[in-house]
Length: 191
Image (cartoon, rainbow, N blue to C red):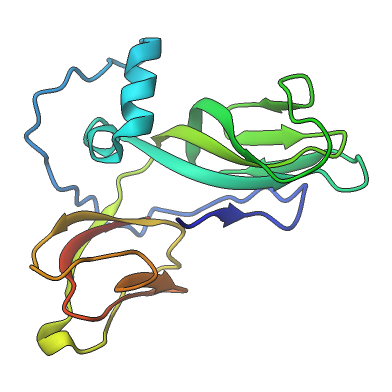
C-alpha cells in the first residue's frame, strides 16, 4: 500500500491540470452515481471505501494519507484538487490520541493537532479528469512510459496481462514516469 506524505504543514499545493488531455476510460458498471450536490449515503461511502474500482467508476478516489502533528503543533495536509467526501483514521502512528476532537477536515485538507499522527483513509472526489495511459512490460522487460507532467497519483484501471500488476512491485511512478516490469501490461489512470 502506498501512502501520501506531506512534509510542509502549511504548503498549499496548486496543481495545474490545464495541459492534461481529457481522456477517461468509461466503465460500464451498473451503479448509481450521485448527482452534483447530492450527499452520499453512509452505505455508499462504505461501498466506495471497500471497492476502489467501484469508487473510481463513480468519480471517487480512495487514498491513504499520512498526516502528523509534531510537538503538538497543528499540521495541515492538503490534497490539491481533490475534494474530501469522507475521512477516518485508518492507522494511528502516535502515542497521542487521534480521536475526532484532535483532527478535522476542510474541503481539501486534513488538519491534525495535539500530537496526533495517523494514516487517514480518505474518500475524495476527483475535480479533474485523469489521463489514461497504456504501458506494457513485453517479454517481462522493464519499461518506462513518460508523460509530459509531474505524476501526483496513479492507479491501475485495467490489467491486460496474465502476469500480476502490483503497485511498487511490477508497476509504479516517479516524477513524470510510469514504469512497468515483470510482464505487467495495463491501462493506468494518472493525474
